[in-house]
Image (cartoon, rainbow over all chains, first blue to last red; front, side, top):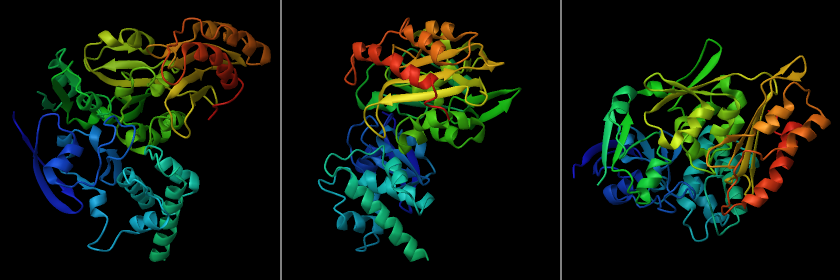
Length: 160
Length: 266
């Protein structure tokens, strides 16, 4: 079957990969590129663990036809840390017990990153809305919400 | 095996559609089918044409391109009355993907946005220029051939348009039902009442008996009482994992009463 070349920027790096007809972006990232940070959860847009940012906006990679990201800029959890230095969001998730089993974490982190880029000082309700498409079955959400609010505080402090 | 074909215009894409083809909008319906091994199609058709995403106001009607996403609707000030409806659809990621055109084909219990469009007497324009009133479009939806280009609506005045989504999971859950009403008033009396229910049948449906009860009267306790008595006439609620048909039938008049008395005003 004919494969199609797709080029995009992944976490700042130029990337080119061949995709199969009908292949979803999550498969392309995990199998084609080897970025295992976004996870396969439900495959139907309910759980949010496959969330990646496309041009800064959260998208469900399992429901994105891979060839539609030609020329676009993608961000995944795999690009958050800078070498051994974790991103603020990763640190506060760790410190606030925002992850238990960790399966929802990559989606939560990307949803939070997109929120804080647009709204550096979100209310608790705005955080809840931002992660409303991401399901967590361990934490009861409160530690995640606290972590994101803590990250917002820390990130604002850094800028000021 | 799946093939994907990309066209430059919607008209070209429309002429290439076959029963085994699915048109890809935002992907939330088609890619879900792909992921779950839906064998009813083997070809995905898409377009590069960004004009199908445009939202514009022309001769008093707002035209929403079929490719406009829920996020696009929220970002459009002319559509502020529909922003609460678009926000009721999924989380932020889904709203960045899910399109207005796709919502027209969303199976029960999805399709909250279409419920609002039904109440607003939307007109569906196809890629060949044919126009269908929303109610007719939905009645023939599953046999529909051709591609939707846009939908157009008139801007409701003041609080004439109201929307309520009833769900059990907060803040986001699938609809037990959604209710959209458009009650234009002339001199305090309702003319051309529209009441639409989502998740109360195979497609969004109008509660015509309740509409009739409100015709030509003012909205007060006694007219609302009369209107809600016949709420579910013509609706066909179904059992699903969220609620039984019996439960939906029992609570529909309660929720409709709340909407008519002011809940869901924007």
